[in-house]
Length: 258
Image (cartoon, rainbow, N blue to C red):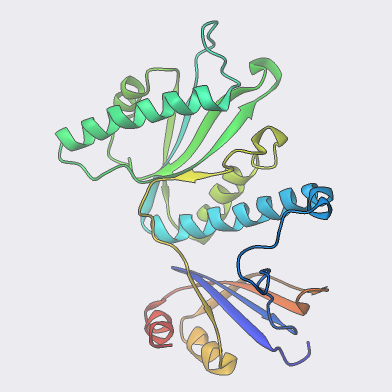
């Protein structure tokens, strides 16, 4: 590609993403400050904005997974028993029950001197025989909590739990599984993913000296796991690369000095 005018890196622990583009980024703000006003044109682009939101959610789910669950984690699915009293297709009703579960779980963890509940999750609808009933998929730190204990704390249905070691292959599969339901139009207007407070966020920064950055990246034994080049009217010719590195220590020390 042509010499890039702008290079950005997003570092999520061992996952490193590099974007190089021909045009400098635009802020999307007015000269008076603040976001651009909501116009009839933006209403017409509703579906485009939905698609952009889904793409952002997909990327952020993987980044938060990599940043916060670096050793092993529990992959937990919470489902509801069919009920005539509660509409299990209603997100607000189910979220209220999930919030109550978190309160019971928090009390249990505190009583047993265990770490606070750390999680990243999505809402998914079970169609066909379940007729759109909601269930939750969670990546969390409940590796040492027995499944039958979680079952008692959940109270509303069934709990399935599996322990997963954090690595490039496993995390890609889990992120794909978490992402498979976030395009559902029933989630429009709701959070496509949710997480506990205080999760570590990826490091995002502009790279002023790409050659120097790549030298440090090469020292981290990177494996290119994804990449493509495309053209956009907003970014020009754009190159995206995704790496998984063996050791981030020197790279993190370098970017913290920038």
